[in-house]
Image (cartoon, rainbow, N blue to C red):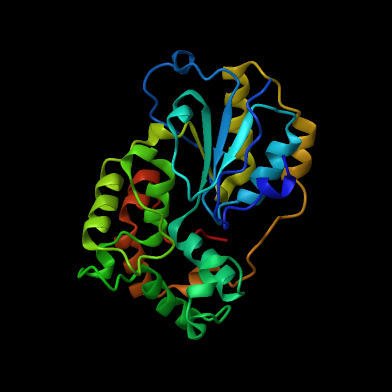
Length: 279
């Protein structure tokens, strides 16, 4: 596999793949019965969600010594085969996620920056960030209160971590989404099953989450991880960082209330209590 394919979630296209031939706490899924009955074998999928440590997680997997793994791009939903794979995913506090994405876009990275108005691309500008936050959540088609959501984080999450048969469309921003499409996303989020993913890693405690998920994979698969190499990645230099002020400096009460409303399902599903993570 071309190593360049196994890195970024900010690109389109088919998921990066290794052939199936022979920085918060981890959150466990509400699995449907005993893990031993799920028939995982030794296969593993890491499903990306941008700005949640995807580049580092790719480096971890390449260093791990494991072979039967693949990375699924965030713009591809889960597939039926993933029901029989050990699925790992990374997640981030919603407010922290928006600041990271905005900073990335404002620095003219990622495809979303190409459709973002230049007036909304000013790094480390909290006032412009708050305008961008509403712009990226705005639909020119649907007539609904922006705070009703779904926010773009919630929409990308629903698209990524529900199965393909749900038929949710790809979404970078909410700009041209109809009321009917937004209702589809609302329904998917209300009925979302955490068991679609076997092990969630919160970026706020990324290293410990990686360790816990890979330990669980070892127990289920019987395959040994090369921990010395994994630790080398986890303790090394941060990959693909978005340089910006602390999250709390971007949010006033109105902006926080907006994210808490538009991405309310994310706060509910992952028990997020604060908008930004205390430094």
